Length: 519
Image (cartoon, rainbow, N blue to C red; front, side):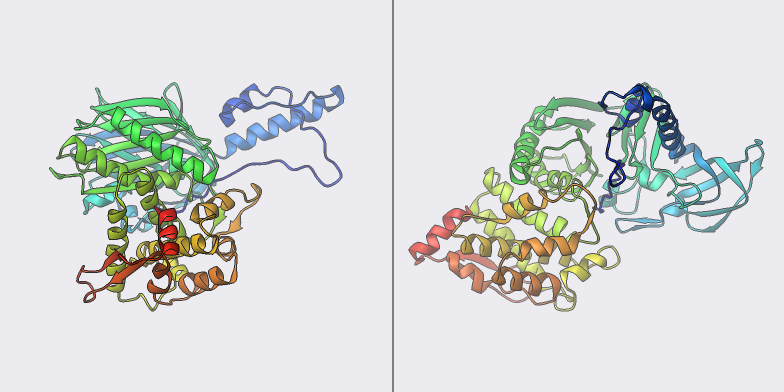
């Protein structure tokens, strides 16, 4: 998945001039912001200034909003038409050409036409994939998008697509990217026109036929003739949207999701502020649940899962996938950190999800050890495992095929967790790192790698582990750490799949005590 940048608007009085923010007619502003706002009472002398502030604020809100109507023109071939208005005139449009390793997205943008203020057609030249230039300015433009399915079914959770059964529309690859000092926009108001008999589900706020968002990059729509949506209050307002027929029920999904969400609320000590939307879509072909692909954007989880199996198998695999994807609602989507720290929000999340599976009894302790061993075996076969640090691997995640972000990141999280538990006599674990991250000041944004490494380096031993395995390309060495738990590493030839983690039958009392706190 991709790093989510959350945009915030705040007000800070100038030094020495602290005082109430006085707004007179705030009902419309509250509707624009999408939340209830309470303001202090204003003395009469502030009324004129307050009125001016309202006008300026509302003008700023509307000036930053893109308006677009998205119409499904054909499902065979798969095409949509977008009629859009930018907040300010521009001479250039730029669309994303790559996302999550999927290339050529800009080549899908076709028949782009600008319309001037006088209503005249403005010709645009296609200078590069997704890049369009005009000789004169325009703010109204119309274009089409070819939404044929990507080459690999696994990519369907990452980019927009459309067929006769359903459509997945993701604004990050459908709308133009904001261009600084030209067509800059921070929010969008969207209307959808779908074929007769189709319905619409989304993670956005809806008012009548309009959908609004202050983060278009995370906006997702699922459309189709056979959608079913169920909303339930769990630790947050939770909606599950399914497409087509499934061997499991909505209750099966909400039950396991509720347990996982409660676990992560406990760990982070943070309740999600937004509603959560889970979209469950059949994986391409008649395949079982071992075939899946997922991505979490903002408050939405898009999950493609094979459904050709028994209810028990589908639910079991669904739980394993959700234990990872639902944690992304917190890490990184609810964090205020900047930079490439995929090693943490992917690798460490993989390990924390495995712990959740164990704690919720979705897997056994033998399954837990077997998973770690399998990842270690794969890591040993990685050709660049001694060439890139985790930080470097994160920076190159989408430009190389290296699995280090996931595999080494997960193994380092495992070793860090074991080390921390041993150092504190089981009084602390990796959970405490997450809790501390969410206790950081809410104002401003911090460099992710610096912040996380500082928290991980709470004493000299942990500092060395973090330095060697995160900041440097030091190969992972299991044995000094796992031996304290009475766990033995058995390896075969590199890439043979024969690596195992076994419990020592002659373990000591102290080893058994540590092992008990891990389970």
